[in-house]
Image (cartoon, rainbow over all chains, first blue to last red; front, top):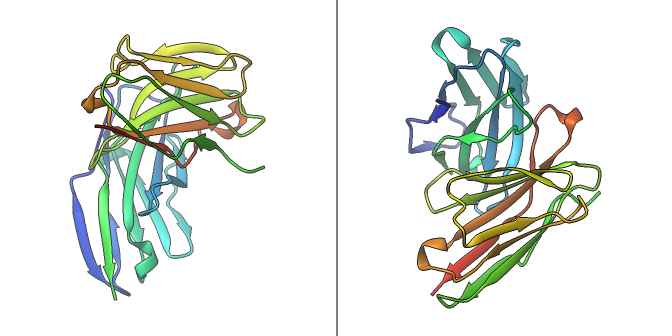
Length: 116
Length: 114
C-alpha cells in the first residue's frame, strides 16, 4: 500500500535558522513521483518540486533543497536561512505511475512556524 | 492563464441541504481531481476525471456525493443531504499528460455544515 509519513507535526524555528522537514514513503511501484507542496495560511496549495523515482539527484532552488534517498525511502526538504514568509504547512505527496489515475497520496503535513 | 478557479470560496449550509461546487481547471488540462481536506490533515483523494470520463472514485465518496465534468472542461461536485461530517475544504486540481503528474490546485471551497 502507498503511504507517506511526515513524522514532524510542528516545527518552530527562529528566523535565519536552517530547518529540515522529513518525509518517508512506502510504495510497491518501481516508478513513482514524489512532491512537496506548501500551504500558507491562505489555504492554497503551492507546488514546490516533483521528483521521479529514477532521478536521485539532489536539487537546490534558492534557499530550498531536497534530498532524495531511495535506500531509505526518504525525500527530505531543507530550508536554509528560514524567513517568516516560510511559515506554512508543508506536505509531502506520492504518486504512482501505474494506470491513468495519478492521484496524490499525502502525508499529514508539517506545520512550520518561523519566528522573527 | 488564470490557474484553477473554484466557486464559491466559502459555503455555509444547514444539515440536510444540497450544495454544489464548481471547478474550472487550467484550460488545456485534461485531468481533473477532487480532494477533501479536513483540519490538521492532508488532502484525501475523492475522484478523478480524464476529459469527461470519471475514471475513479474513492470509497470516501458516498452515494450522497456526485461529480460531473460534462464537456471535459469545468467540473461540479454535488453533496446531497449534507451532514456535519461533510464540513471540510474541497480542493480541485488539474494536470496534463505532459506535466508529469504536476497537479495545480485551486483555492478550494470551504464548506461548513451547521
